[in-house]
Image (cartoon, rainbow, N blue to C red; front, side):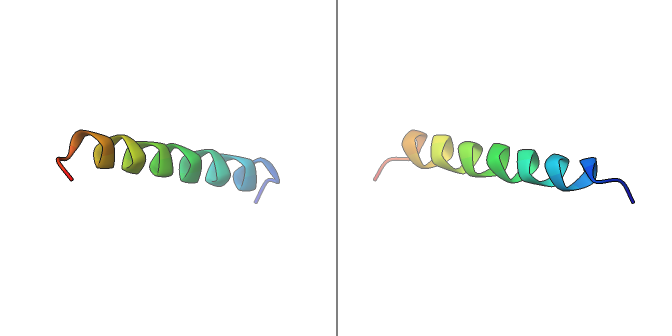
Length: 29
């Protein structure tokens, strides 16, 4: 496997966390 895979995984994790934060903001508390 390439070393770039790790970077890709980190980017996906960041995207996921960002989406989760947005979803939390959109949902009524």
